[in-house]
Image 1 (cartoon, rainbow, N blue to C red):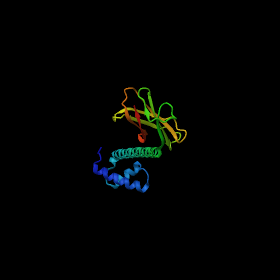
Image 2 (cartoon, rainbow, N blue to C red):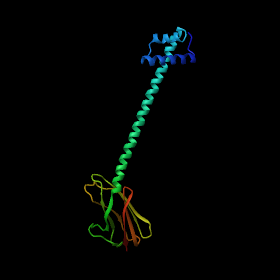
Image 3 (tube, rainbow, N blue to C red):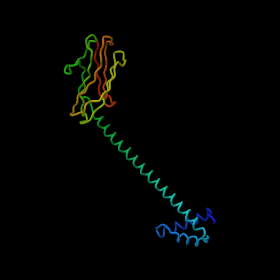
Image 4 (spheres, rainbow, N blue to C red):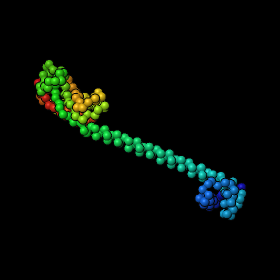
Length: 205
């Protein structure tokens, strides 16, 4: 049995497209046979023409499905990115509104502010900060950096607050003090979610 040439197949496809546009439906075998006659092609090519057309239709449908899947995935990714960006921006706006309205360095007793510490008897230094606009029902990452009189970082801490139930909200961090600690003016800096919020200097003697 003869087989279709590429040129003949192209002619059939063009004619099928024309018929399909007119009827808006998939062609049956009789219509394909009529197309062959219109193109002066032998009717014994009918089986090959049907097989080739079905193959092209199947490929076109598969490509269309792939396009739909890819488009759907792209839309989902774009939506996810947008959602993440919105959530991140809202969280960032919350962080940007936070400020320190009071801070002091103390011993274990949170009431009495201390400006000088004795390294021979004081073992812990506390830095307490009261935050304004702390986000209610949320938790914050608090980090502190302690530097001695030489500028060397002697202690760093990072922790998460309890769930915030009110604003203003007081939080704290602490650092150890030993007889070997450097004497002089020290500095502690607190950051909220990696954003510097306050700092304080004090003396170790």
